[in-house]
Length: 170
Image 1 (tube, rainbow, N blue to C red):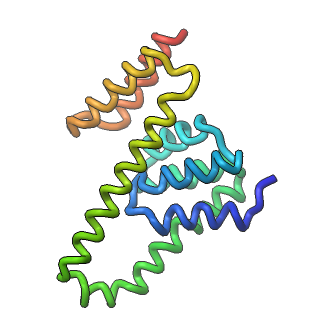
Image 2: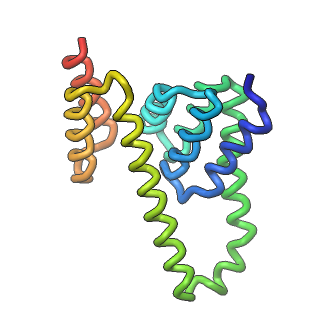
């Protein structure tokens, strides 16, 4: 049974300590799987929904909330990703005083690199799941290569990956 308060706090923590986009993915992945409130497929579906939906990348979090806990989960996820932004507005005035200091730039670079490392760990965990064979690796590597060029639309990459999955796994 999902505890709504704990559920909200997990989403809030992930959003509070993220740098935007998919940087809250590792935290949510670890916490929701550990509590058995989600499965890996929920993350894939929510990311796909977030990518094809218009608007900000954060929509995938609301989709994840819906897939794992219904309408209440979507609402709690929405509130959890909005609150950190409101907190940022509250501390923005103080940031102007410290933004030129060297330690701030170093801190932000370290956090960003840490998020990259954690995200790669989640990717590695997902791709090593049972049922992922050489065909899955090919799809993942080609999608990564296309995304790396930054010349191919993410929706097209997802469509091509879906088509490849259909053709290779039917």
